[in-house]
Image 1 (tube, helix red, strand yellow):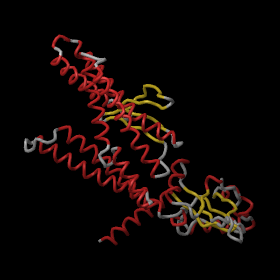
Image 2: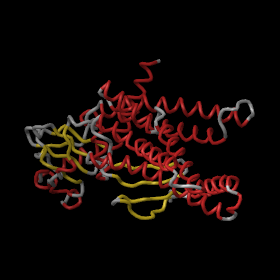
Image 3: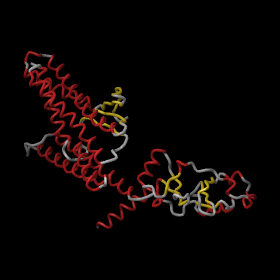
Image 4: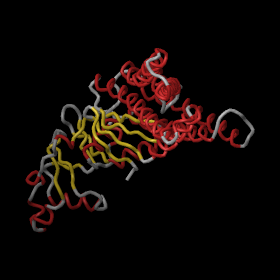
Length: 376
């Protein structure tokens, strides 16, 4: 569906290749092969074969770079969902973010450190005289590319590794990881726009700096940095709110002593919006919930003589949430468990109300509008 297909596992981590990877492999093979053919005219068709080998070794370097990130994450108890190679390199998909700025820093620098180590190893290998001819040329080229990979990735803008380093530093200074992400994302957007402008000027023949690939890379940086900034802004807004802030106004709450007749009246007054009501006792403690299906099961004439308490169903613990829990964590709970609503209670068990997934979206939109008005 997304152009990725699985090719196996690496140290228990699912390994995927995006279809765009083959485009780069062909280009790298032809480029490397052409260079080797010019440098060693007698190679013939073997130049393309060696170019393919060089291309595969290049992607092996990228893979080791991503394994560096993965190892640093695993050392912190963070799971790695997958590693994917694609047009612009690789991506290690982590199960969660680091818990501390220091942890985020080491995950970010682990990849470039691996690339730097590969550069040093290959540089020493080519300088030792052990290799000669085409193998030496390939090793030298790979050393240079790993150096570029290490230095380019340390540019301080998301989604590059240097952007994650900047994020960890700002996080450490401000104590807010979302602020760190927003700062690093804005820098990434600036770098992206700069690359796009340089690439466009180069294509138009106005500047000798940049190329078509500069423009493409700039677009990639701009898009991803923009998404990171948007996501961090939303997460920051949610983290500043609690479950109590998103409780539905006039939540469907009734007393256990309520008759089925009054339950039916409450349902009618709500415009039949609710299919179930939360039930509380005389002290406000959550007892459970009652579904309107009971109105079909009990004859209408008996409604005034039956109380809700006789038809209460328990509310599972996973469908409840503490009123002071961060709305960001609430949103994650709803998403992970596939829920649409939660009963919000205080620490002493007192019922606060019902929280719906849609209410979080409305509250977020409202807070963003208020922020715009204040900044206007």
